[in-house]
Amino acid sequence: MVDADPERVAASLVTIGVGIGLAIAGVQAVAHLTNVFALDADVDSLSADIDGANAFAWASSMATLAAGLAALTLAIFEPARARRHLLLAGILIFFSLDDVAAIHEKLGTAVRGDVLGLPTGWGRLVWPALFFPLLAAALLLLWELRRRAPRAAATGLGLGLACLVAAVVAEVASTPWYTTGGTGESWFGALEVVVEEGLEIVGWAAIATAMAGAAYATLVRGRLGQAEHA
Image (cartoon, rainbow, N blue to C red; front, top):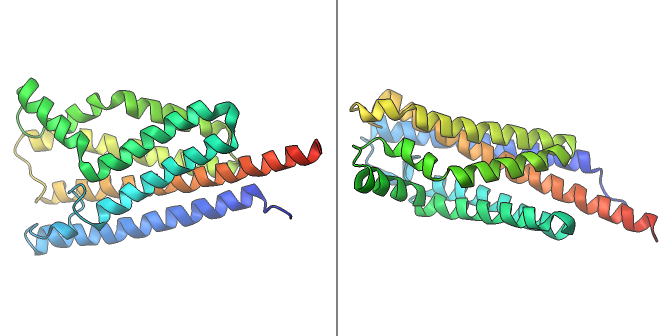
């Protein structure tokens, strides 16, 4: 059996992943803006800003879960780095759960109000600070994987990481708007949500498919190594 070229497989997977992510982001943007400006933000199933309540939250969660499963696959195919891959898988699977359970928002709200006594809006700054160890660990592990991945997979990982970092920056940067009385039903608030959530789904889709490409490359390298020693 002749294995397909890992570089070509990774490039195809990343292209598909980014394409799907962009398509979902586009539909999500239209749905959210329609909900805010035509339906008075009354239809939760069209909102991009409600974790766990609709198909958009499910899509983001599934993309993150796919990345976690790819990390588990890498742990099987690359035993020498299994601990790193398992740690990354655990973090990503937790992020997937967080997408539907809104753990970061609930924790941020509790710390903001009950511990720090800050008004509404500051949670956008509090939760990234609380989650920083997990965010930093995931970033470092994905970046280390990027350095060893096939070129196309490395490009996908780089794009995905850039999108996710930009999404967090967008949320943190919007803090002054919400702490001074701004709402999500304004043009600024609605566009911030569209940009942030769009970056997130594209980022996770790119990372998941890039990691799948990296896993395939690892499998092919292992087979070639076995053939050489046969």
